[in-house]
Length: 248
Image (cartoon, rainbow, N blue to C red; front, side, top):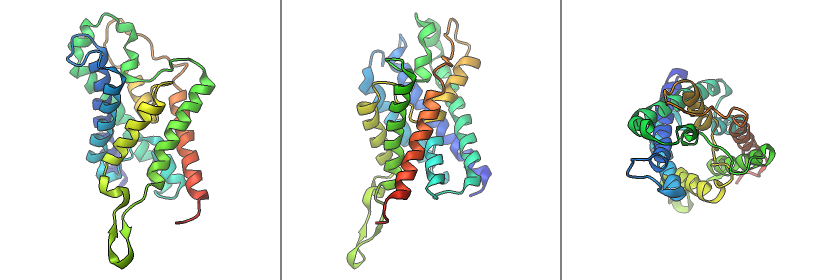
């Protein structure tokens, strides 16, 4: 696949992911919506199916949608390093587009929300207990689980007698959605589980510089590096584990 095609498919898929993922948070947080006060499980389920939708759309490029996954695959030798900038550029652009589409969808609700200064959390993550070191650890662990699953998950192969063993490949992108869902329910409590630098930074940029939300807060830039560096470290560690394990 050409570098341009990678960029296009990653842009479209990530935009879909972020539109639906931030959309479920907006539905739960903003007033005057049918999903208001839906709760954490409502949001986690929405994000899981957002991953399924975005990944399915971006299948032609391999559906990374996440710079941490792209990094992990490159370190593991699954993709060429020359493709990495095109994956990441598409993911970042798609994240900005998806966030803006979410704002457009809920524009009237943003206008009437009585706490506009507290709307950054619809688009980007923040810790419940601020501590940069331990917040970083949380993001490393969550992303490690995601990327390790992608690298180590059993794929389809021919079994004895030529009978195919489909492994997790039979699940398609639903398998990734399940993993994202369980990461959210099990590990998402401390930081909101970014587990994806583009998912957090792209919407944060869109919120701070592009969205005309009256009375909005700032981008919380002092924390913004954590959901970028943590996932990248988690993806790197997962790839190193993959390389260290004996071949099956």
